Image (cartoon, rainbow, N blue to C red; front, side, top):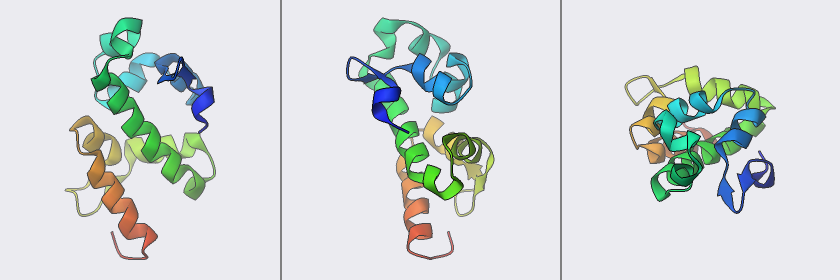
Length: 116
Protein backbone atom coordinates (compact mmCIF):
# COMPACT_ATOMS: atom_id res chain seq x y z
CA UNK A 1 0.00 0.00 0.00
CA UNK A 2 1.49 3.32 -1.06
CA UNK A 3 0.92 6.25 1.29
CA UNK A 4 0.49 8.70 -1.59
CA UNK A 5 -2.43 6.62 -2.89
CA UNK A 6 -4.35 6.79 0.40
CA UNK A 7 -3.46 10.26 1.66
CA UNK A 8 -4.59 13.85 1.24
CA UNK A 9 -2.67 16.79 2.63
CA UNK A 10 -0.32 14.48 4.53
CA UNK A 11 -3.08 12.58 6.33
CA UNK A 12 -4.80 9.28 5.75
CA UNK A 13 -7.90 9.84 3.65
CA UNK A 14 -10.63 7.33 4.54
CA UNK A 15 -12.23 7.61 1.10
CA UNK A 16 -8.99 6.83 -0.70
CA UNK A 17 -8.27 3.95 1.67
CA UNK A 18 -11.76 2.57 1.03
CA UNK A 19 -11.24 2.82 -2.73
CA UNK A 20 -7.90 1.01 -2.49
CA UNK A 21 -9.51 -1.80 -0.48
CA UNK A 22 -12.61 -1.91 -2.71
CA UNK A 23 -14.91 -1.21 0.22
CA UNK A 24 -16.87 1.62 1.79
CA UNK A 25 -15.80 4.41 4.10
CA UNK A 26 -18.21 3.01 6.68
CA UNK A 27 -16.45 -0.36 6.57
CA UNK A 28 -13.05 1.29 6.91
CA UNK A 29 -14.33 3.04 10.02
CA UNK A 30 -15.72 -0.19 11.46
CA UNK A 31 -12.56 -2.21 10.77
CA UNK A 32 -10.41 0.47 12.41
CA UNK A 33 -12.70 0.69 15.44
CA UNK A 34 -14.03 4.15 14.62
CA UNK A 35 -17.48 5.62 14.34
CA UNK A 36 -18.92 6.40 10.93
CA UNK A 37 -18.77 10.12 11.76
CA UNK A 38 -15.06 9.88 12.56
CA UNK A 39 -14.32 9.17 8.92
CA UNK A 40 -17.28 10.76 7.14
CA UNK A 41 -16.57 14.32 8.28
CA UNK A 42 -13.31 15.83 7.09
CA UNK A 43 -12.79 17.73 10.33
CA UNK A 44 -13.07 14.52 12.37
CA UNK A 45 -11.09 12.39 9.91
CA UNK A 46 -8.06 14.56 10.61
CA UNK A 47 -8.15 14.22 14.39
CA UNK A 48 -5.27 12.52 16.18
CA UNK A 49 -7.40 9.57 17.33
CA UNK A 50 -8.82 8.87 13.88
CA UNK A 51 -5.45 9.21 12.18
CA UNK A 52 -3.82 6.95 14.79
CA UNK A 53 -6.35 4.16 14.21
CA UNK A 54 -6.10 4.46 10.43
CA UNK A 55 -2.29 4.44 10.68
CA UNK A 56 -2.34 1.32 12.86
CA UNK A 57 -4.56 -0.48 10.38
CA UNK A 58 -2.50 0.62 7.36
CA UNK A 59 0.79 -0.34 9.05
CA UNK A 60 -0.49 -3.86 9.67
CA UNK A 61 -1.93 -4.22 6.17
CA UNK A 62 1.31 -2.95 4.65
CA UNK A 63 3.32 -5.36 6.74
CA UNK A 64 1.29 -8.46 5.80
CA UNK A 65 0.50 -7.58 2.18
CA UNK A 66 3.74 -9.14 0.83
CA UNK A 67 2.83 -12.42 2.57
CA UNK A 68 -0.42 -12.62 0.64
CA UNK A 69 0.57 -10.93 -2.59
CA UNK A 70 -2.06 -8.18 -2.47
CA UNK A 71 -3.59 -5.53 -0.27
CA UNK A 72 -7.03 -7.11 -0.71
CA UNK A 73 -5.91 -10.51 0.57
CA UNK A 74 -4.10 -8.80 3.44
CA UNK A 75 -7.33 -6.97 4.28
CA UNK A 76 -9.26 -10.25 4.22
CA UNK A 77 -6.70 -11.77 6.62
CA UNK A 78 -6.89 -8.71 8.87
CA UNK A 79 -10.66 -8.98 9.12
CA UNK A 80 -11.20 -12.72 9.38
CA UNK A 81 -8.22 -14.77 10.58
CA UNK A 82 -8.10 -15.49 14.31
CA UNK A 83 -4.66 -15.00 15.84
CA UNK A 84 -3.53 -17.82 18.10
CA UNK A 85 -2.25 -16.70 21.45
CA UNK A 86 -4.65 -13.74 21.61
CA UNK A 87 -7.87 -15.50 22.46
CA UNK A 88 -8.30 -16.34 18.79
CA UNK A 89 -9.49 -12.84 17.96
CA UNK A 90 -8.64 -11.20 14.65
CA UNK A 91 -6.12 -8.46 13.97
CA UNK A 92 -9.12 -6.22 13.29
CA UNK A 93 -10.56 -6.88 16.76
CA UNK A 94 -7.22 -6.13 18.42
CA UNK A 95 -6.92 -2.83 16.54
CA UNK A 96 -10.53 -1.97 17.39
CA UNK A 97 -9.66 -2.58 21.05
CA UNK A 98 -6.61 -0.31 20.83
CA UNK A 99 -4.15 -3.24 20.87
CA UNK A 100 -2.37 -2.89 17.53
CA UNK A 101 0.96 -3.58 19.25
CA UNK A 102 -0.28 -7.12 19.97
CA UNK A 103 -0.70 -7.72 16.23
CA UNK A 104 2.86 -6.51 15.64
CA UNK A 105 4.14 -8.88 18.36
CA UNK A 106 2.27 -11.75 16.68
CA UNK A 107 3.83 -10.85 13.32
CA UNK A 108 7.28 -10.47 14.93
CA UNK A 109 7.02 -14.06 16.21
CA UNK A 110 5.98 -15.29 12.76
CA UNK A 111 8.89 -13.41 11.17
CA UNK A 112 11.27 -15.03 13.69
CA UNK A 113 9.97 -18.46 12.69
CA UNK A 114 8.29 -19.10 16.02
CA UNK A 115 4.85 -20.58 16.41
CA UNK A 116 2.62 -17.59 17.00
